Image (cartoon, rainbow, N blue to C red):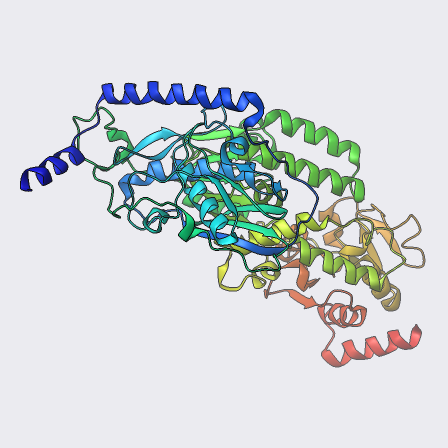
Amino acid sequence: METRTLDAQQARHSLPTRGAALLFAAKAELLRVRRSATEALGRGPRRFQRGAGRPGDATLGESVCTLGLDGPEAERALTLGKIHNLRLAARRLDGVLVPSGGVFSFWAHVGRATRRAGYVEGRELREGCIVPAVGGGLCQLSNALYDAALNAGFEIVERHAHTSVIAGSLAERGRDATVFWNYVDLRFRPQRDIRIAVELGRDELRVRFAGVPARAPAIDLVPLLAVPAMTATAHDHGDCGSCNEESCFRHAPELSRPAGRTAYLLDGVWPEYDIEIASSALRSDIACVPVDGVRLRRERYAWTLDGFDTVQECRTLALARGASLRRAGAQGAIRQRANLDWSARLARAYAAQLPYDAEHVVVAQHLLPELWRSGALGGRTFDVLMTGMPLGALQRALDRAAAAHPESKTLADFRVDANAVACEADALTAARRIVTPHVAVATLFGARATLLPWSMPARTSLQRRTADALVFPASTLGRKGAYEVREAARRLGMRVVHPGTELEGPAFWNGVRSDRWPSYAAALAEAAVVVLPAYVEDQPRMLLRALASGVPVVASEACGLGDRAGLTTVAAGDADALITAINAARGYSAREASIGLDEAHCAS
């Protein structure tokens, strides 16, 4: 008995050899040929497509498992490779519609996992070891599909158990299904139409089958399956990155090196974000930008990139976007649609450039919907550099403004499609941090928000002339508060100085004294107050410049400046509060300001 036990232990701990690996590869190829021949005769299952049909939203079966990111650091490289492979396969399965009675095949939908298809080396269980293999880790997805299929009561057409068991895996409960291209497959047949949903969160994989529930309770197929009895033990030799078997031909000491880095997916530069990134990025991190603005003297993209060893550009796309947006005009629905389209294209280009070991991502907000929709953020943590209000909050603000000013030509001309709004909302919920200098945006996210200080212009001393004008530092747009500024100027008898782009109509300022400014500096020199009671304002740079010049500012909370000297904050859409704030900024006492408001009401 002792001899047999010792022999078994020696066999279990014997190292794999090249000869055995070659023999295994030869047998596998023969089995692949045989399966391919069978499939060619029309006996194999077909590939189902994604569709617009809705088989039902009820959860028929579900499986959730962890991705194993909390494992030993030495095994992290293969774990990140596994997650990347799961990310690719999930994109092929998510949304697939399987009709009632149709046979789902794992390989028919996922396809062969090759480097050309984008797969990398991940964790594969072979001969008791976790070894690096292209496409490694896909068994975690097949395990989850099988587990969910059992929970849904589907007929199991083909399933193969693992020959070894990793402690904590589904194999411990006999609910695993190994796959190996193409002859070791997972196949099942649902009894009703279903949609497959596959989602990678930060640290978990979720598989869900949605459909219309059966009237009768589903049959639990687990007792009917012939599951081989196996002892749940940890793998014998460990991960190739953490074991010390240097004589093994698979030994890969490079896998034990630290893995994981941050990818910065950027677009137009914000000075606040440039300072934050330059102070936190590591040389091993990767920066994705439309172009290197410093090197090419493109101020819009002038990020500080000398701290990155790897900088990836999308020059052709950036040039095409610039030409397209110039044709789209300065404002309006056409430009907004074009912006969204180009943001999605840039996001797809960045997703294709992301290395599998980009464990954390810092991403510009407007790239979020497409990145989330594509699954590129699955299995990763990410922070968001907010470039505006969330789409849902933005559109609600525009709806309020449109209700207050139904005569506006711009307030209701465009809304983002519901899918993009939902994708961004889901991504913002999943984000680790929300980074912004915008106080109103930060308030929406509570403890998850990191509030950066606004980058202030250098302080300047103006030669102030007669200060009798309201300076409105924006195009004549309803969302910038143009209607409220016009009302305040009319009732106070003041002059409005503005840039001159009158997008609400050429006669918008009729009845109010108004001038186009020759420059913002000249406008500030004659400003009694700078006013911007906007419903929406992402970058209040003009207001910061006015404050730095010592000019009083009246702005809405939507401008995101918070509390600061020289600033009076009002609610967007409240012309009465705007008039009171303007009078106070001009040096009126509280009583004088209110008297002025009463007189304005009488005059109107």
